[in-house]
Image 1 (cartoon, rainbow, N blue to C red):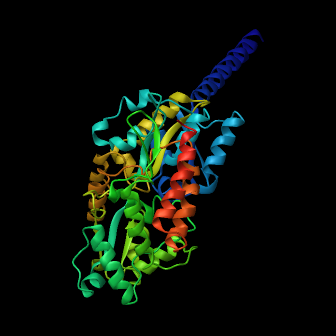
Image 2: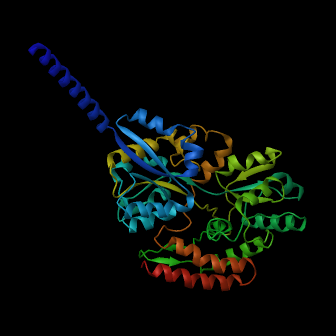
Image 3: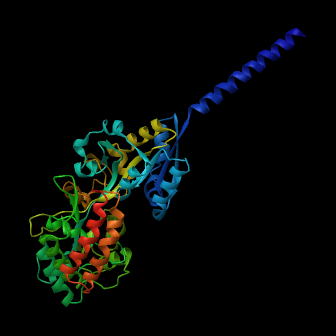
Amino acid sequence: MKKVVLALLVLVMASSMLFAQAASETAATKTVRVMVWTSTMDQKLAPNDIEAKFEAAFPQYDLEFDCIEYDNLDNQTFLSHETGDDYDVIMVNHSSLPAFVAGGVVAPIDDVVAKLDMEYYSKKAVDASIFNGHYYGIPFDPDCRILAYNTKLIHELGFEDPKTTDDVLAIAKAGFEKGYYAMAGGLNRNTFCIYDLGGFMLCWGTPVYSIDANGKYVCNLNTAEAIDYMHWAQEMYACMPHDGNLDNSTARSWFAQGQVLMLWWTPSQIASVLPKFANREDCAFAEMPIGPTGVNGSAMGGYMWSMGSGAKNPEGAKAFIEWALQPETQGQICRGLPSDSRAYDYPPYNVPEYDMFRAQIAKAEYPVALTSVLLDVFDAWSVPYAKCMMGEMTPEEACAAGYKAVQALLDTLN
């Protein structure tokens, strides 16, 4: 009887040890919570099986994506922080990073950046993530603008391929007389004044605002270059459709259908617009046109990886960010352009359609310094800008009104 009891005790102890070992192994697998844009999940992360690939490389972590619609990205980020449910990794729109830093939502990731070879990154994009000497993000999905144009129609109008802003305006006027729109886009977007048609202002070497030698934020809308640009933009808009609510999908479809001569072209349009051309050869790409000051500036946008200040698994967060930034992995994750130039040697970026972006992004920059009032600047400048495009204000009047409104916002930072 004693032998039976002893045997049972040994069996119970062995079972307990196995259960404890299994529980220990389960406990050792820590969750890494990553908040991403739903479109990024649908178009890149899920099709490329990123979750399984990361977990294979780091079996100690369980990757968990939380997919958020674009319009709710910022609200969800703030809400998760305020409720103490911070994400480990956050997909951050570049324009939102200053507000997240000011609100204590994100944490420095200097040690992650120290492991990366910054030689292959856009310095201007990386520097924009530095606040008070620390990195609060790292670009993984930037974009920039190049000029796309219909070669067939432009050559039929008697023009060579556009190289300068003067060329672009001349083509616009001649094409409009023949029934073509020069470009297309809706004034309803508050970024129109800085990123869309407004992005061409960088070809005058003049951002809407910048930082002076004393570290002060100054609005540049009172300069001769800004006013000259606004005259050019007003003439361009006269040759564009005057539907203030025109959405980008319609504008791009018109371009593919031959109703629009030129377009500011972003990386996502390679997949969404280029296939709509009946003849692929009709669409050509160039760097942004050279402006009167000899500059062909291109507005950069896109996304960064950041770590939540209340991350429950900071080591896992850093492991994911570092892994996701490997050149080959970037091509499987980003929707715009890779931030590491070596990623252009891997699919899907190792095709000729991305060659012009590879050249342009080396010169691209965020159209203004990233600050906590950036979104307010969009709203403030878009009003006089739109009125100028519609002929309700002169370029001089619009710049004066824009300068007053934007500088007032910047003064809250100075």
